[in-house]
Amino acid sequence: MTPVRTAILVSGRGSNMVSLLEAARDDSAFPAAFSLVVSNRPGVLALERAAAFGVPTDVIDHKAFADRESFDRALSARLEAAGIELICLAGFMRLLTPWLVEHWRDRMLNIHPAILPAFKGLHTHERALEAGVKLHGCTVHLVRSEMDAGPIIAQAAVPVLSGDTPDSLGARVLGAEHRLYPHALRLWASGRATLEGERVFVDGEAGAAAALIAPGL
Ligand code: GRF
Image (tube, rainbow, N blue to C red):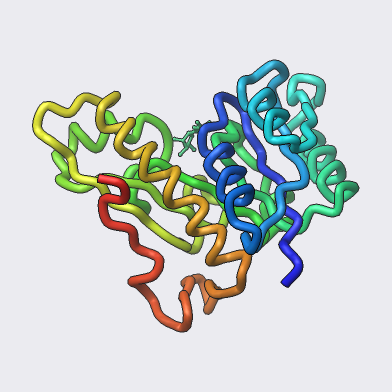
């Protein structure tokens, strides 16, 4: 099977990006090939890290555009010029316009540091601690116009431990993210995960293959 030409969009440190690049490097049968990394911010660590993997990088600085949609259209044109078929958002800190989301419908994945639909938005680890949840985690989903919403491809759960701070809990979740994103992308890019209505099924089933419990603990 020809791997799906995939771009990763980043804004910062790029640790999830690295987990994806490592998965593809270590598995010659990985169903996605990373052809481009794009950052909306110049000089970020993720760009250096991508270059170290030999992946082409580009910066499209959102500050150079008059409005969100003109930025999104320039970004999309750049991706299409590179023959990109699938986008992975990995810490891409931009609100996306409906135009971009629709244009790449079912071809754009995001990772969110909470078990959606709980704790959409920012500061998820603080909010999880405040809410007293006993399990926290992360979600990879298809992107829809509403922020942090869309069909769920895979989720990972980690325990909340006594004495956790937002940082210690966040580090545990981040470790799970690094396991989950390559797994979810593998499911989606290989065609094992499919969309029926707005639900994702893996091998025709709703659950198990897409649920990671305390990965790496
Ligand atoms: C991750 O926690 C991800 O879930 C969220 O932003 C963070 C990005 O971290 N969307 P990194 O840039 O991948 O290290």
